[in-house]
Length: 127
Ligand SMILES: [Zn+2]
Image (cartoon, rainbow, N blue to C red):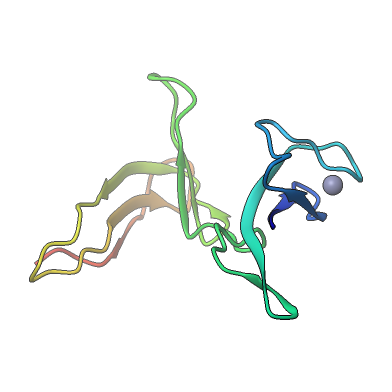
């Protein structure tokens, strides 16, 4: 017998028998949205979390949120929102045999809302 390990938005954890699992399960403590984050099964006398799906406490490194085609993208790097953006570039491609790929990120923004003193920040600059 195995179980799915669920986490909710408030970081409660609970186990659901894999045969009882269904889409859209709510937290048994606070009823908020929850999703499976691991797969537990018994190995001897211990439960093993064999396939951790994601780490709920880890903040994303980089997010771009675009609400609409005409809206200004909301950009967060290491949890901090980038204000007064003038350009946002994100490029990623899959790994190849001879090259391990990392995303390329370029942000142009200023510290003042009048757009003066534009700062360019690049991560993993392409060669
Ligand atoms: Zn909860």
